[in-house]
Length: 215
Image (cartoon, rainbow, N blue to C red; front, side, top):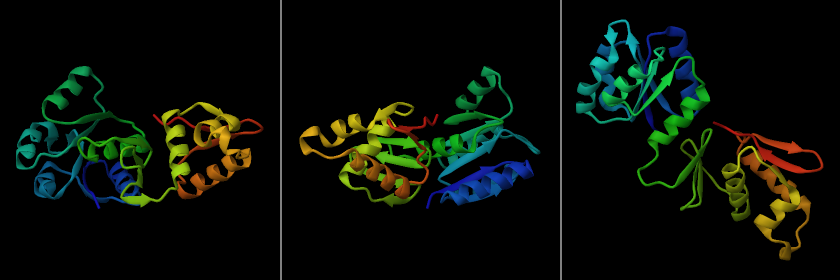
């Protein structure tokens, strides 16, 4: 299980983010000060770092912390100026998010930064789809899909927001020579929804399906 160090001195935001990240399968340690961050840094796999803490600007400590252990760092801040973002990246942060932000977007960025170097994975919400290994993971849990289910998932994820007619899906996944029926598509969509509840697949009555776009 990946370990997240959450550094946030806003009580309401800190409690909410810790609960959200733990509900998505991570071990999340929440601290509120630079002093406590120093103590917990070495045990983390990734850091979510609020910039303005009660004991100062966390960026002033970041280069020293990264010398102790090089970690991907996502900075959270209310500062919106480009100069502030550049400063955070120059101090060693991998990413920068402006408050207020989407928890789902933060989760997607965490998954991306924890992805092994050279991985061919595609991220959709909490899913990581490895196209070379043909594996699907929801956080740390591997989801077993049959070959056609995987092909259908990949097609939808790579074309988010596009409506596919059932006949088009049949042609692309099964081929007309296999003589399947449109019911085959419906059954596979149902299986994907059951196995991957986070998929936001919209049904277009009498037409087909669309995977709602996730940015």
